Image 1 (cartoon, rainbow, N blue to C red):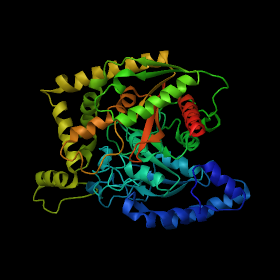
Image 2: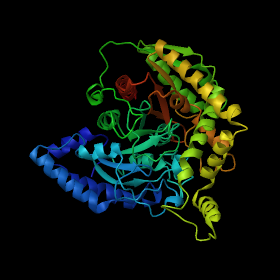
Image 3: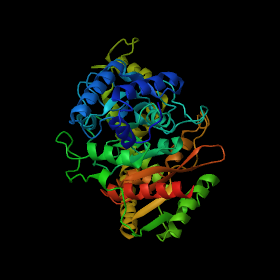
Image 4: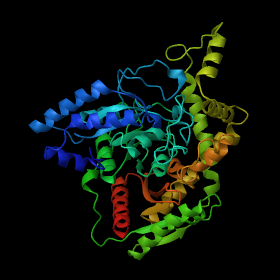
Length: 480
C-alpha cells in the first residue's frame, strides 16, 4: 500500500474503491510489527481497531461517516482511554487501566477516528529525548542512533515512519514541537485552554496542552477543529467558539504579513550553523515574497528556561504526589510499614529524571525558598508573557528555530541534564506565554536530519497560524 500524507488522499482513494479502513488498519499494524525496533508503540489495539474500521467502512458506505473517517491515530501514553492501560511510560502505573476516556479522545472517536494504540514517551512527559521512558527509548526513523525528541517521541516516530497517519500528544514546554522538528513532520501546540485537558495525566497543569503531530497542516487543522472547544469537565478550558480551521487554510490573495524574528535567537552560541542557515533562508524567502520581516528584541531569552523549570517542577511536585502505591499502580514488594510503603514505592517506581524534577519542585516550594524561586519565577513569567504579547501586537507572527540543533545522539547528554533542558530554549516561550505555536519541516542538514521552523502568533489565532504555515510549506515545495 502506498504511503498516505493526508486524510484527503485517503478519502479520495476510499471514494474510488482503492482502499478501505480495514485495509488501512492492516497496513499500519503490519508496519508497526515490521518496525517494532523503533519502539514507538507500547501497545496496539488490534481487534478493537479492526472492529472500528469495519464500523467506519459501513458508515462511509451509507453516507453517515464523521469528519475523521479513514484517519488512523495513535495516542500518547498520557491520555486516558477507558478500559485501556495508561502508564505515562512509568513503572509506577504498572497494571493501571483507565476508568474513563479523555474528552479529546472521545471527540476523535465521535468523528470516526480509528485509534490503533498507545505510544511511548518520556516518563510523565518529562524529557526532550524519549530517553526517560521506563520502556526504553523510541528510535528516530531517520537514524536509529539518534533521539526522536521528547516527550512525545513515540508519537512523532509513529507518524514519521508511517505507523499511523497522525498522533495526539501533549506539549508542556515543546513536547510536540521539538520531536516534530527532529522527525521532519508538523507539530502544533494550540493556545493554552483551546483543548480540554480532562483525561490528560498532569505534569504541570498551567502549561500542559494536548497537541497534534501530523504529516500535513491540513490534518492538524482538522484534528484541532474536532478536539477544541468548551468542556464542562475542565474548568480551565476556553468557551470561545471553535472556527472551522480545515476550511481556512488559504491566505487572502495578495495579503502581506508583518513577521518578526528574535535577534538573540539567531545570535545564540548554541544554535547549530546549518539550522540557522535553513531558518534564515525561509526568512529571506518571505521577505522576497513581499512580507515585512524585521529583527525584534526579546530581552528575557536567558531567563526563559530557568523560569520554565522552576515553575513546572513545582507543579510536578504537587501533581505527582498522588502516586504512592496505596490505591493503584506499582507497589514495592519490599515494604515493612506505611512509611516504607511511600518511600520505597516512589523510589523504585519513578525514574531518575522524574525523581530529579520532583525534588527540585519540592525544594523551590519549601518555606525557606518559596519567595526566592517560585514567586520570582511567576513574576518573570508575567514579564515574558507581556513582552511576547506586545511583540505580537506589532507583528502577525514570530519565527524562530524549533530547536537549536537537529536530533542528537542517544547518550550524548546523559550526564548533563541541563544540556537537555537547554534544548527547550526556543519552545518554552510560547508555553510560558500560553500562545499557539507550530513546528513545520523546512529542510535537512548535511547528515540528512530534519530541521524545523517554529511560528508563534496571538492567542486563539490558530487559523492564521495554520494558513501561514501551509503557505510557507507550499512555497518551499514550489522553490524546491
